[in-house]
Length: 246
Length: 68
Image 1 (spheres, rainbow over the protein chains, first blue to last red):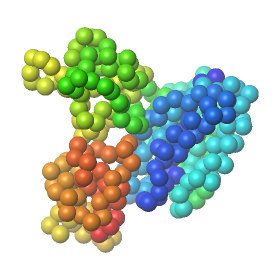
Image 2: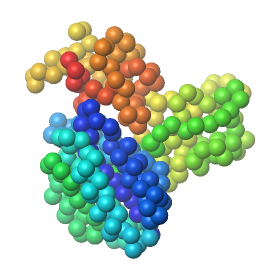
Image 3: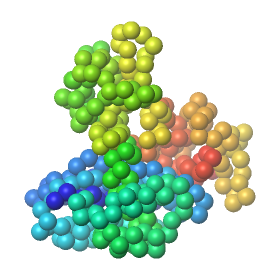
Image 4: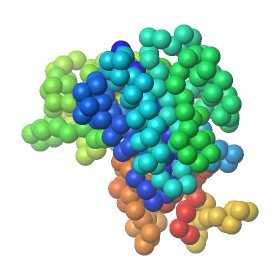
């Protein structure tokens, strides 16, 4: 079965980030032979004085394949893992949802978008998770991270939110690569122009910048590019600051 | 301290907001506390920038420096 796993609020200002813990949780599935975890996405939530985030209020999520018989054990492991590995003073939350069993995905997605716009409560999150039969649990501190954890799953479910964790690694001559070659060398499945979301064909040549990051758009691992202003190469990979809004 | 506004809570908020890449890089270049945040939380093109620092806390308009 395919699941989404999200965690939030596991760090403090000096600790390792939530992304690193999510990565370990993703890899654990394969280590145990229970399934396979996928790439992590980072989802921005509301920045507001009434929300007690550490520094950025973002949530991390990954999709995974797991044998249904191992799901309960995995959830139990993930909860203990967060209790053990989360930083002092953090308020970790865990959300695990079996994608095909989410009864009202629109409601869940609406929660994710609301978490970007208004201050939500733990009660809001628990009520919705209960109604949709989604696992949601807290593992220390105030447990406030359940809001971001549920929102993380919701926003990943939109298939249109967030940046993938990590930089893409490519080998190229003169920093130039065709779209086809980028797709061969990386998890990227489509290359689009930032301005009008035009899909570039396989032969388009891209000038590869120093930091290559992919975003989640229409369910695809997407590399965004912008015009160089030249004829050859016509396109350049987006910079970190250009990807900030994703 | 010309880059900072003292908030009523006694914290220092970056005066130029979230879109002053050049100034944020200049301030970080002079700062003994700068430490890069996790890769996924970096948003500026310059590596050494307050926008990429683990000791910045984003606010609605800008960010607070947690070391000042």
